[in-house]
Length: 151
Image (cartoon, rainbow, N blue to C red; front, side):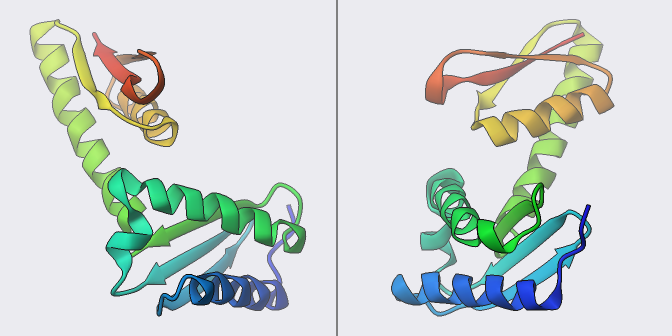
């Protein structure tokens, strides 16, 4: 996997600045290049708008920005975007929720339905469930799709 060049990092930052400028949003942008990944972190007073309801705006913005920057990045490079650590904090909350639910499932032997969540969050929950020694499966359709934990 190719490493991310400094020139590429600068161009990703410029494109992120341009997108935010077109949206009329002032922000601090930090871009980090790692082996096989590029991380864009945005800090702004407009964070609630950028994040949206349950991260919907942030997911959309990440998708658009990854398309805008695709031709800059080596093939197979993961593109990550976060606003004021929303994803990081959400991941920590999900891990705590799964840990608590896994404990209850192990103690009672009863399955537990977790709240509905998007595909990215369900994937994380499945990973956490395996770490806590419980089975997980997804049930439901569309926006009501959720993870169920079992012993």
